[in-house]
Image (cartoon, rainbow, N blue to C red; front, side, top):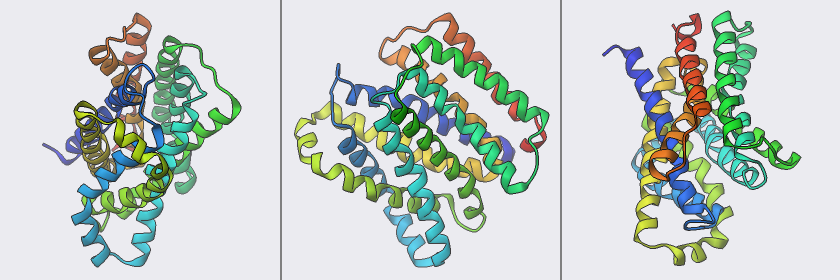
Length: 293
């Protein structure tokens, strides 16, 4: 297997895990299911993932320079805490359709940030992938319901998307001299600590609500989307670069819709299937352009 194909598969696998994570999250947090409180659950989920990274965190603290530790911590605050907290709060008042549209700005923000850093204009392949992918997201958003939301909620979701985009652009240079596991450990720990402080007041109440099934799903989310996907994305984006790997984020709603249909019995419409097809095609286009080579 070529290094590029391996990087593509790792990135694809990470996005697949992130895409199906909302299925378990909806079960645990939804009012019609377990109805766990959001902030304590996020703290528990990422706290468990951080514990798994502890051996590599110790290695990083012993061998990394102060500059690299600060950069890794900044990436963690942006990508873990900076994405999850504002996005969770914004989702309370923003419809699913609007959230899909707003999260679709992530690949576009990454392209803009990379272009500003390198002082070059995006090419025709990048423009075409953006148009096709965003069209697919629009179809998925329309099928999910009216794209509605208040100003504060929309701002918070956009802020979360911007934070994650910054993480994607900042993290690859750190991987030149550091292992993906150590980078993931530093970022995960730095981003989790603020969430533990926010979620601590409601933690005892949430733990009293936990049964065996809820624990099983929580552990699966911590090990899969929070830990394994983090390492897979870090390794994949290190080889592909921020721009080429960022296009895979368009696939998130595709996996979410498919997972919802298979696990929660949520229906898939023809419009959603068409939107998913356009998104898959946009990712294919993005990997054919000069920036992907």
